Image 1 (tube, rainbow, N blue to C red):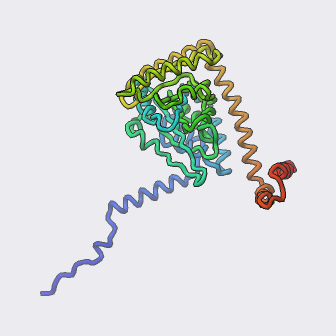
Image 2: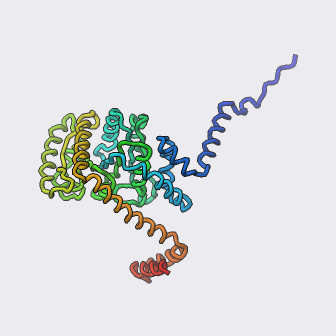
Image 3: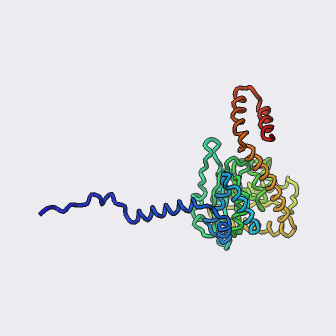
Length: 358
């Protein structure tokens, strides 16, 4: 009796599950390539659609000229739904525990029924221009919280510890109905000042025993902070944290009174053990109540919008200058002349600027 032939093609056939996966991938690709309809995107955004918010932020982050007009329309449509949140800036040197603190703080807020959006800014490499964007990995618990939204962004060429489109992202998050917007800055030193012009409350995280209590007095960032939180105040570090708190309290008395009517506070906390987190929120609500009652809260928001106008003009002029065809052609020539010491950078700049005015 002849042997039954076995099919040699069985191992090469595509299973139903693989076909389904391929169809899903194709479907996702089609969705990504679909033209963006602003009215639909805004409607979904206001209805608190997370994917719409992510798509909207991606649109405003795009440097493509074809997206700039749509981004403008998107922001204009979202503005009437903005300005309803409390904006909090959080900064501190690397290693101070910003991500751990924000996860503990954000979880506490969502536990109170608040919807929290976190705009985490990661530094971009000056060499590769890349960025790790690992904040979602560091905030494992919060990333699963349905009341929380975490969006990591790279600084790019933006200075001051924020990304190029952080302000716009704040507007979009507010339009999506988030009660609290937290901006986590890069945290690399004295440049963490730009965020002060974007938030209502600016929290500086510090470490005890880092040797910079008195050095910190010299830093402009101390002047900008509405509160200083000595993090990692636990275990054997409690005594050092209490000492650091006293030192910073003394330091803050050296600065002049603020227009807000608020005197900056110093507090200890342990994000790892969830200690002192509620005290920080109570302090922030106290600040907001005070500044809303004396009119400072609205006044500073108006000032921030004026600053946003000036910075937008500067950004647009810079973009228009470098994207002009005549500059694209002349810039490499001038750079080559500078390398050969045939012209000074100042003369080259004057020449290029004169071309842009033609």
